[in-house]
Image (cartoon, rainbow, N blue to C red; front, side, top):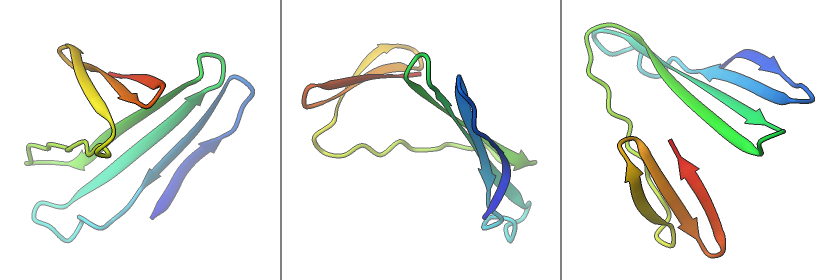
Length: 89
């Protein structure tokens, strides 16, 4: 694992991380994840980028059995667990 960037702040905190676990593949690829906590909006933004060439990439989203998902629009879903609700884009 590698921490590429760490920026704590009053309005937002950002962490960028990656790992070399898939660099043994042909062609080699490296996943990079950026997590941004927006303190004002109370939002967590997660961005995944795959560095490398030659691969179509699909990242599955696994939810706990008690989480209900409702498709709102292309690329947008509402997640519910108990009395909590989140929008996933």
